[in-house]
Length: 198
Ligand code: GLN
Image 1 (cartoon, rainbow, N blue to C red):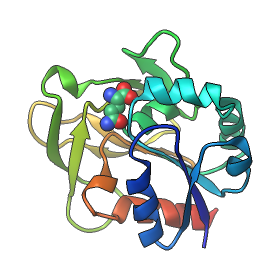
Image 2 (image 1 turned 45 degrees about the horizontal axis):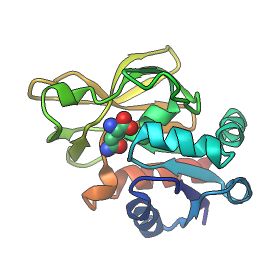
Image 3 (image 1 turned 60 degrees about the horizontal axis):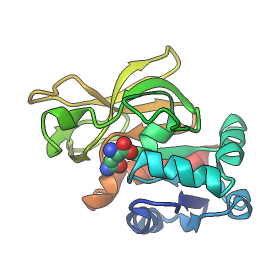
Image 4 (image 1 turned 90 degrees about the horizontal axis):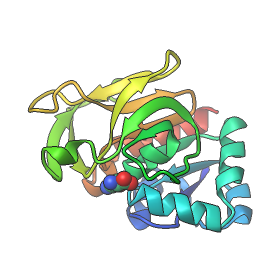
């Protein structure tokens, strides 16, 4: 069983731990660099990216996580976690840091100009079965990706149709929405399988 950490600085940590455990991973919270050393992979949960950024600096995790990412550690980021993985953040705080993982530009609170939270069906390529019932909460969208980034999912209907909300670059995976809140384990299973294959 792969050991997968959930970055436990702020956000919906417990939901991710439960989802990972159901996918037969050894899931545990990560708050300190020593705990990071003991995991094969990491999930960065939803929450508030400016807060996660600040706490990652305070807890001495920013550089260690960047280093592990450079070394190939698989990471899945959901919502604020997607923002933390992006190399460029629009509408962020000026001092906001990221883990510089996926070569993409994300816009924070992007859907929020239309509506704070909403739900929409999203299909993820490589994940069989029906469309996800995707829950977006002050979510980012992906505005631009580099060549090496695979677009896995887009909103298919409504005013945000066409917006990119799921991407993968190598071992790094990110979604704008929160699969940990709906009981649909397919994204977590996809990530656990990715971790197993590395
Ligand atoms: N708006 C939050 C941010 O900028 C993300 C919201 C979420 O994770 N649900 O970090």
